[in-house]
Structures are given as C-alpha cells and as structure tokens.
Image (cartoon, rainbow over all chains, first blue to last red; front, side, top):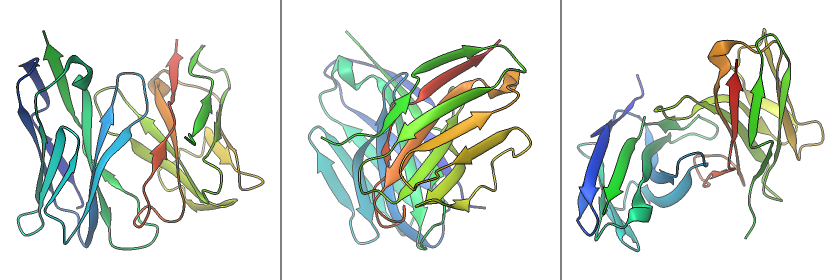
Length: 113
Length: 115
C-alpha cells in the first residue's frame, strides 16, 4: 500500500534553533517528493519539489534531502523563526499521469521565543 | 501572483442542511482538485477534474457529496445533507496538467463546522 509516514508528529523548538523533520514513503513507482508548509487555517504552500535524481534542494532556510534508495526524505530548517510555526506535509507522487498524490499526516512545528 | 480562490472561508451549518463551496483555480490550470482535511491529518482527495470531466471521484461520498465544473473553470462542491462528521477544512487545488508533472497550488480553504 502506498503510504507516507512523517515523524515526529509534533515538535517544539526555541527560536533560532535548527530542526529536522523526517519523511519515509512506500510509494512506487516514484515520481517526485514535495514538502509543503501549512499555516493554521490556511492551504498548503509548496517549499520544495525533488525528483528521483535530486538528493538535495534548498529554499531559503529550508533544505530538503532525498534518498530514493532508502525512500527517505528530510526537511531541515535553519535558524528557526516564530513564523516557521506551522504543519509541514510530505507529499509523494507516483510516476503516472493522473494518480493521486499520497500525503503524509504532517509534522506540527511550534517555534517559541 | 496568481492564486486559487475559495469561498466562503468559514461556514457554520446545522446537520441536515445543505452547504456549497466555490473554487476558482489559477487561470489556465486544467486540473482541479477538491480535498478534505481533518484537523491533524493530511488532505484526502475527494474529486479530481481534468477540464470539465471527472477523473477520479472514488473517495467522494456520492450519497451526499456532489461536485461540478461545468465550464471547465470554476467548481462547486456541495454537501446535502451535512453531517457532524463532515466538519473539516475543504481545500481546492489546481495544476497546469497532471499532478505528477506539475505542482499543485492550494487555495486558502473553507473551514466547515457542522453543529
């Protein structure tokens, strides 16, 4: 069964600290993996998209990594800010035209002062 | 910057009433999706349109939910009658072509509360 598992479920960190969120997937055949940020009460916003051949991609203070062999991805947030408080959702798509995306349940990050 | 528009942003209704949500995708995006997101969970696909045609509605509870995209542009999702378990965020997203090849852009969502 195609699944995306994220850990931890929730995380609290101090402002200015770094953190890493994990994503493991069993989706096959793999096309690409995306990380979305979802603020409370808002729709998800894309942070990064990585294909099979990419193993790292950055977007400002966000850096995503992908290991297609072990089917693992991580999202590293550097020098966290209060505005980073949100849910981070890992999404994997299969390598076929209209197959639905497989969403993880997200990691709820709280950055506190 | 082009955005997916949704309305209303919030809706409170009593069970057994009818509700409708509206979505206007980014101009030129052929594919439109409706998702339901329960608090603390990831979005679950309800229905996917390619232009005006339904591509996937396998997870849509068809006894009470309906969706249409008559002119292949904006779309309406309806629930009749609403049940307590329908309380959730309803997200609309659009992409240029298929989700595999193109990024999905999400709207702000409609938060539904059924009393």
